[in-house]
Amino acid sequence: MAKRRFRVQGSNYGGELAIGQVSKEFVDYFIDKDESDLIETVTSYEWDDEDMGDKDAPKIAEEFNGWYECDDLEHLNNSYADGEWFVNEVPADGSDDYAWDENEVRFEPYHLYGREAYHQDKDEEGLIPVLCFHSGEKGGFGSYFIETDGEDFDPKKLAFSSVETSVSEIVENVWYNKELIEADFDYNDTTGKGYYASVGYFNPKWHDKDEMYTPEYLKENEYWEGFDEQESD
Image (cartoon, rainbow, N blue to C red; front, top):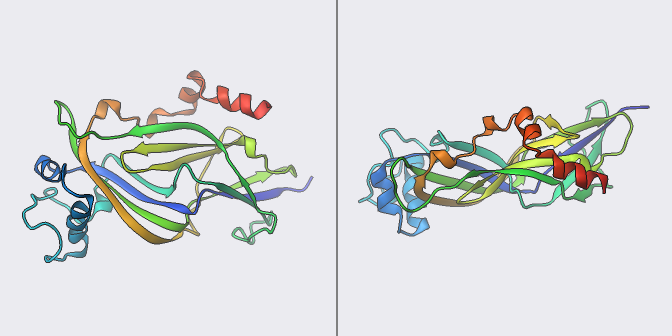
């Protein structure tokens, strides 16, 4: 049977998000201030504009060039986790991977898990002062290509994970038939819709790191059990 190829994409809304350590003084200064003041001060570093931002604000960090580099804890760039998903069939030979099919299908995949990367307002022993900054965008994010041996694309075979933060929840990994699919960002083209930011204190003990979720870990902890049940319905 001839091969078939499908392009899967998440919502057209999403964006880039970074979480990283900053100075305690900066966090304490902005913890109760308006989000707009925080955003203007952070972006003033990126645009090198001395007339922008809060002139009384402490330094963000010893070295800070832009929010997108403040990412020692998390850095994501993808669709929002609560959006609609789409699948288009494309030429099997890969000659036109970004073709649009008039029979495009919208569907809701299985949410396998969400990694937690929240922060809190209150400082406690062992917590890390952090900046969480998100650029909300509209457009095309990661694409995922699925090949079959002639079968139709099965929406029930697709699963995804996400990262939950204090600012937004963003798609991280995608599987088809329990096989991890690498994201393709060749057609990643977005328009900025707005900035969102928050400061606080991050508990590293509560941080669900990506490397923990190995295939063995997912199997041993029965993450696929619910997936198997919905697939058989």
